Image (tube, rainbow, N blue to C red):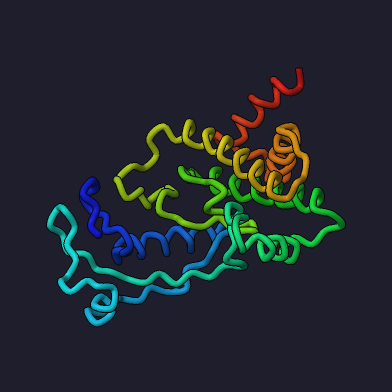
Length: 229
């Protein structure tokens, strides 16, 4: 159904312009060495396809603009995300985590996972990007960042037109999203961890990348100063 709140949002349908944007963000992140999902292609939905969805008339946004619906084909290492450890799928969730993060134990696996995720964030933030919606629901068990709608990259504004406004503050906020994501993963794995672990991971990856500058490491270091005392 069409959203009554947003000017250009149809719930359940992806507009072509949004799909093209996500593909650009994915390609850019991959070119930087970020661990993220890859967009394999965009496929237009015909009227026959829409009929199968119960949409007999061409969809229109509330602002009167026509929707050009597409299917976005995305490649992942796994379909499971951090937040998917619920219900009947739980057993498969654990199997997938162990397959994608082989280590002597899950505590070690969490350590490596956390470092790699911190590295990805540092890489794109150092280039002026930020993920305004990082969380357990859009990080796969392979450590891939996915769902690019609210990832800002220089030259690719957000759907609402926002670009680098208060960028450093938004980058710093991503540190909190990182902590929430690692906490959710550790909880699911029944592994003990501390914020000190996360601070150390960020500092180690920051050093290995040549002390890049961004809000994520600023926030980690600020919290680290409290932790150190």
